[in-house]
Figure 1: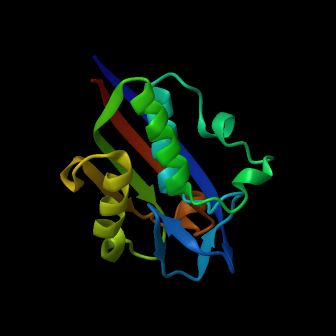
Figure 2: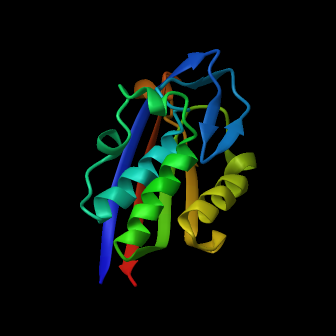
Length: 158
């Protein structure tokens, strides 16, 4: 049996914060604000996996009012959700994500992101797609005030 999940995450960008996407620190003047490391790519994938299993969302499992998750490594949060998926008898078939950010250009970081995510998801790098798009100067993404990620994950019961 196959299950599809969709995830979405948006974070404000602020000066003085690191920009972490897919577990990779990206050189940037602005980074994402959040309770954890604000890795919008890992968060969207986490929500996609949880959605495919009908297990709620990231805020249910790792609430931002809980001090345990303050400055948490979001790849570790995704790893916890992958443990849950395994316990429920699921494994990832593939994942596809689109990161929307005005700058910096992410092309130099995409392969490292794919590799780190593939490791946590338990699949080959050829099963993880990460694409980057700009906001073309429109809305909060285009005005370089936010980063937004959309992700889709396909699970199979093993």
